[in-house]
Amino acid sequence: MNLQLKLDSLLTEIKHSGKRPSLMLHVCCAPCASYVLEYLSPYFALTLLWYNPNILPEGEHSLRFDALRYLLEQTNLQNETKLVHEPYEPEIFHKAAYELKHEPEGGQRCEICFRLRLERTAKLAEQHGVDYFATTLSVGPLKNASLIHKITCELSEKYGVSTLPCDFKKRGGYARSVELSREMGIYRQDYCGCGY
Image (cartoon, rainbow, N blue to C red; front, side, top):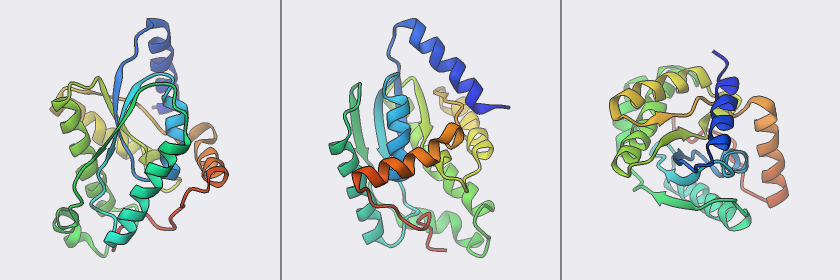
């Protein structure tokens, strides 16, 4: 399945509808968000969800959230954008991932981490009556967009909220995120956040 072509089709449909659907967008970090916000803000009323219990240590978690706030201050988005900051809960990630602490990056531990954050996103999207949910995670060149899409489809069925078919690294998305981060002086981390 070509996720980018499916997203192109959906965005064309939204553009021609004249409506502005709502999107709950899980944000993994400011650099990834920079491109995704530029790309999606013309189409959606955005609620950005900061929920990343996987990021260790706490100082790194705070640094990344501050970078996101800085990005939002520096960016002129076309439509309404809200920011929801969920509590920092590293114990939840630790409990879910500890048994897989020796897995390499990209293995089962990553799937658990994706699911943990995406489930919170889908659940909050349902509670707030949001039309769609998605994540910025697929901008990262090491992130498996097909796996992320599979998880969001499962959660879409569970919570009754539509998901965006997306692989944001396509069409130069990752390169654009690097460019935007450099232009704005946004902190770029050198690891996913996982303490393992």
